[in-house]
Length: 147
Image 1 (cartoon, rainbow, N blue to C red):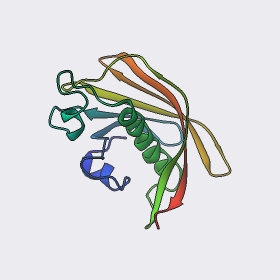
Image 2: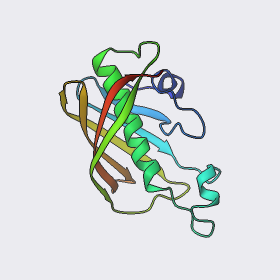
Image 3: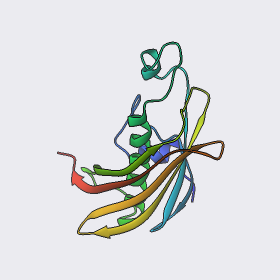
Image 4: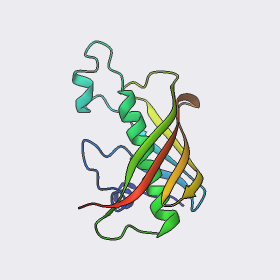
């Protein structure tokens, strides 16, 4: 299953400049998701991180991974978000950064469900550029009321 940006927006409350999933390229409900984030020079964080050598902040790479897990959890649990419900990041473990992400890169995001216990979802996540690992982490999230 694939999702374009308009479909992605139905599953995530984020909007510019914080919507970090451009497209879902593969989704296996209850199993895994692959998505992309096109990294462009005109994103606001590049003006200060760093002006002479712009790199995508690691925290935004983690956020992109977390957004991917939210889509996968919604699709796997209820199929579509209920009004007023969102998936919130509740934990990040075993994070490793292997290389920089620069403007012009296409960040390939992969999330796989490890477990679901008492409403807490645990995922194995990876981000890569041109097949080279950028970041790996375990992400935990849970569904909450947006209020």
